[in-house]
Length: 330
Image (cartoon, rainbow, N blue to C red):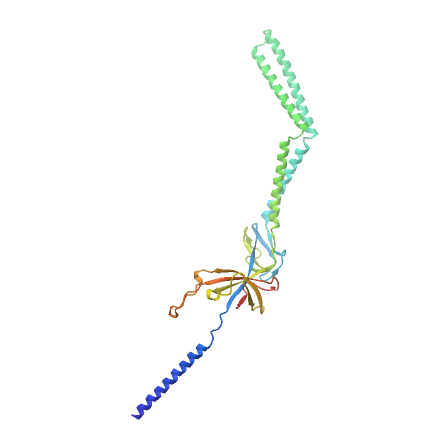
């Protein structure tokens, strides 16, 4: 009996110890404050894409990924043989148009004027012979010696020679007076079109040397030297160093105190310093980023919002890269 009573006492003591340990753990757990939530985001920069306006071959890439570039630096050298051939064709067409324009401005040469005059004089002589022949046939016809058909033939020949004389005279006068104004305008318009074609092809050839349009960092290079690239095909991406902002995905229960236009601080681990920022946008990122509640704890769903903030300082960000961590100081 005593032994049984002793076992019961041992069980009671062990149970009491276990209950005491559990209670102690619960009390300690409740007394320890929850760790403060860290709102972590990242630095972002605007990019620009370097591409070719014409189909070409990559002759040389002057930079590597990660290189800093300044506005105006040469990034890529291309080779476009088709453009060189098109330029030669356009220049030949322009030279031909200029020659026609010069001819129109100068008018006919003295040799052409002399030739037109001689043709006119021959036509005059032919008309005079035809006129005399017709008059003679006319008299013979009246005398009954010549048939009326011969007279009609002589008259038709005379009229044809008169027309030839008038045409030759017009050609001579045109040679003397020069080119008509509408012909000269047409020649000048053709020169203008040819020069525009040359300018267009030349602008494409200028694009075979691709320059940096702004200061930045080369983030991606797609083709290798020697590869062919099409018109508009991307060659590299450059991240602008002068345009920086920070983006955070914030659960909505952490939004109090964060409104558009308010100032805040962001800690940059890469530089071990804080930066003052101003919040510029708060945007719902969609249902896919909703924090689902645990029904057992009687909670409710929470949405996530994208908070965008720009630094209030315009300098001191040399070396910052897109994707670097940023901690929102609360």
